Image 1 (cartoon, rainbow, N blue to C red):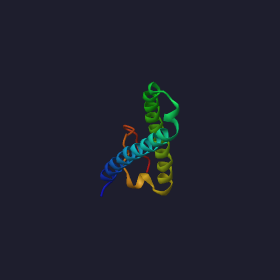
Image 2 (image 1 turned 135 degrees about the horizontal axis):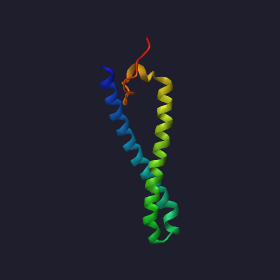
Image 3 (image 1 turned 90 degrees about the vertical axis):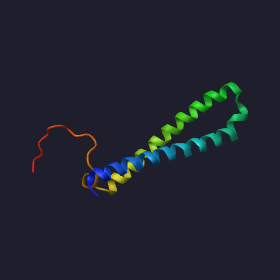
Image 4 (image 1 turned 60 degrees about the vertical axis):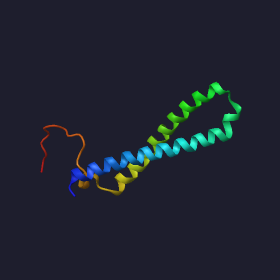
Length: 95
């Protein structure tokens, strides 16, 4: 496989991972909310709680994604296996 295919597969895998983890974190937060907090708040607060839980799930997933990506960057030489997503234009490389 070449670098472009590796980059495409990495981006697809990372996106799929991000979506799955977001759903799982959201479900865990919803379960925790329904078990411990839902009985103590009014029905009107449930709608706000749903929105806050959704935002918290996105934030938690973002932090987890960054931690895992930093770990992968330490283990894998990204320049060797992946093509840059954004090029810098006409920058001459010194060899």
